[in-house]
Length: 336
Ligand code: KG4
Picture 1 (cartoon, rainbow, N blue to C red):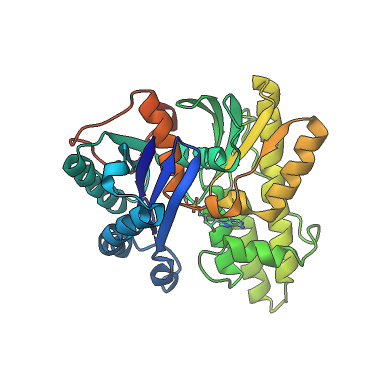
Picture 2: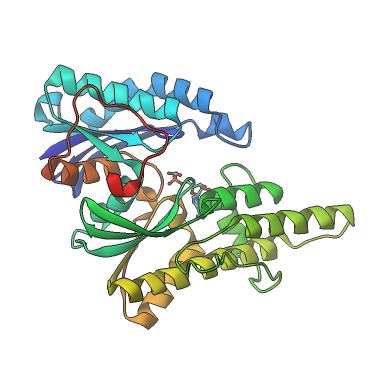
């Protein structure tokens, strides 16, 4: 079954064709990140305009790269939540038009469910149940994937998402936007014990996290040093921050594994590309005898192949929509 999917929840306009939820036929991404880099963050109105300009050519290219026409497509999937509302609307309306014109089923897909499904594209043998650490620019959660479309959020951030925290810290360190990957590179040359930083503990909630204190601690450290004309080691600070994030995430994943009895762990979202988190998880899972599934680096960030992959399982579960489908800025992952 060939699914044509669209993703436009933030600053990537993407279209892809995936067969049977597992095999990528094409995966096209047009990013507007260069426009937003001028402002140090995503400007929603500019993101929406960029999606409007890019979505038709990206769709045409996805079909061409797959060597297919709409006649070869069995269903159309689209990210319908969560995201920047004007941005999500562009993808939803485009997908509705394609589905209507080609008389194909329309499948609404939750963006974070899509990130989780990136693991199905990387690991053909991965099947639920498993735990997924979802870490992106907008989400930080530990999800129990009980079945392909049955999920429970066991713990999540009470404030900042981990990617947002990486980007804000990168900004005070003077790195380009989006800073997560630059901070990751810088951290690889630094000492991770140079600056003691707070954890992300939430009282009486062992699987929840709070990153605002950690973010503020780094920002205060940098501003205090500037006021006193002290020079900080940016690689050491990047490494200490990366360690603090990893040290916050990994014990909670292990705790969730203990609580649920799940022996398979996956990771999803843009921050799943982080080298420190990947290495620490590999070590922790080896020690705890858990099987770890990491998405391939190109599939960590936003893309439409992951939406097609999850769309396949949503379709098998009968989760389709008609042309009244709306877009939502927020939506519970467990609801789908
Ligand atoms: O999944 P994604 O592309 O978009 C959302 O759905 O939110 O995630 C983007 C986030 C950004 O905050 C970006 O800085 C972060 O992922 N990111 C990283 C790395 N690569 C991307 N954060 C830490 N280390 C990385 N290597």
